[in-house]
Length: 202
Image (cartoon, rainbow, N blue to C red; front, side):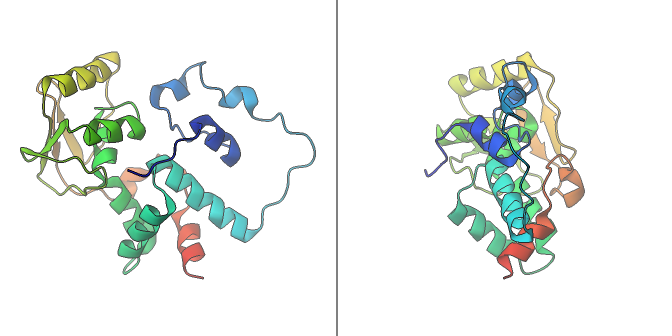
């Protein structure tokens, strides 16, 4: 499985803003972003329109943990009608993001690991593909005791903020996809997707 293996905090600094790539650690004093940001000297460089477009694409790739080929395939599937909104909906429907939105993992990186290790069932069938797109009325459960122990630790450490399009049975560690997500459900992602559409339309 291709993935980014470099330091996550460096990616936030390069974008000039927190992308919350390391889950709860980003909300604590252990986050190095506030300590490092603002240390550069000299006048800030004015970004060109192309640079702004590229930055938005890089931010979205980093948030959802996709490499260029995966991201381009997702965009190509979404570009037929209203690509700016459909792109976000497609990314939200990914199984790794759904696991994160249910509160089963602290971050999308951890969610991807849980899936790849075979701990997740979708409609009682094991799915170990993080890019699998969930559909309405599907159930998502934790398969075995090892997986349940991992997820239980995450759920007991904090009160999960479950997305509106999902429902969580916290006692049985079962999530239900009530409906497909919409663009309005993704207001917490600080990305201008219209700039990404413009970039790929050149």
